[in-house]
Image (cartoon, rainbow, N blue to C red; front, side):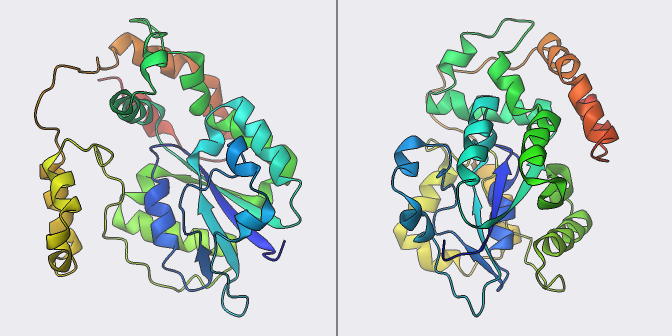
Length: 288
């Protein structure tokens, strides 16, 4: 490997990885991958392209950059994928750090279901749901302490940073989170990040919204750079609701399903607090 130090944002899906990646990409000592979701360590077809392909994803300047960054939440999609990722990472001659940003399980699952339903891949999982339960594969994605333990055993806790999605959404907490992340990456923690832009907001993956129409309109490109992020964020929230035919709708999680999720993850969440000193007490209030 020509790049000695690499950081992987390993998840969670629908947990703010896009925002965190884009914020960290502003730092002059970080080389961000040209493709955010590289998926190198778990997609066989990409892994087979080899190490030279992987290194080619960065415009690496050794005199400037301290660490290479990529964000692939797919790395923690299931326990089986976690083990595959760990074994493949260990074969590379480089120093790895891992950032795991965690989101309250119920809103994370709700958001994931919506995206997966629209894109088609959640259909097989939806068929496995009952009015009272969700599939084991869904629970695996939010069994955070279990996943952390796998990485910890392979790479030690010193190389793993745990963050909360909820902290990234509040300005004061987000600034503290970015400073903490810089210290973890051993780069200048006095750098001032611009944290106002919303990345990968709700329904941003949909093509049947007025916001998507505006975003894709090439003739509006010069105007986009002139509009402040705050105004764009507000417009995005208002215009990101799907339009047109709504024959296919996703049934929301039932209260019983939500309770099932919290009961199934009770021990895992307790481990987050006891073993990893992460306060997740606010996560248990998401049934209403």
